[in-house]
Image (cartoon, rainbow, N blue to C red; front, top):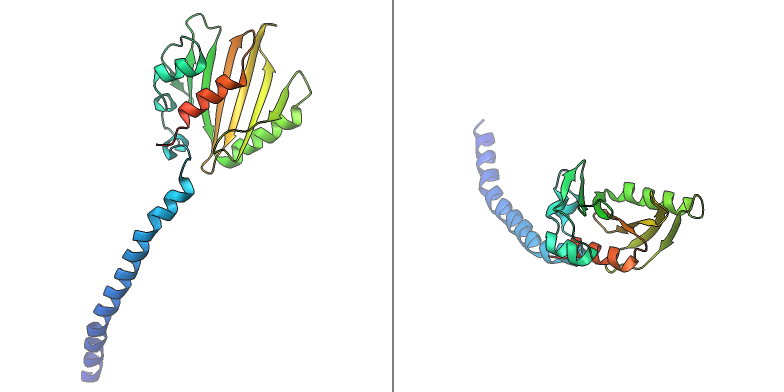
Length: 185
C-alpha cells in the first residue's frame, strides 16, 4: 500500500512538467495555425455569408447594391434565407442567396445540363477568387425581360446572385453585385 502511494506521488510529480510541456507544445502549435488558416481563407468571402440564418441583406450597403446593380432598389427584404432588393415598379430586382458547397455545385451542374433547352443558356465564366462560376440566362415573364443567375463557388460555399431587368442585362452587373457582396474583409 505504501509503495502504491509513493508511486502515485512520483507520477504526480513527473506529470506536471509533462503536462506543462504538452500545454506549451499545443500553445505553440495554436499560435502558428492562424496564419496558415488565414492563408487558406485569404481573399474569400466572409464566413458569415454561409452561416444558416445570417441576414444576407447585411452583406452590403444599399448604396453599394444600387451602384453595382445600376438601379434604384428599395431596401432589401430577408425572407426564406435570401435577400431581395427590388425597384418600386417591380420591373427589376436582385436576389442574393448562399448554398452549402455540395448543394450549390449540384445546382450548377443541373443548369449546365439544361443549357440549350427551354431557352436556358448556361456558360462558365471567370470570377476572381472563385473556384468555379456559372452564368445562366433565362427568359423572364415578358418577352423583353431577362433574368440571369450567377453562381460562384468558393471554399466555404456557393453564392448565387439572381438579377431581373427589362431589356438586356450584362454579366458585368452581376459580377459587380457579387464582388460587393463577396468582398474580403
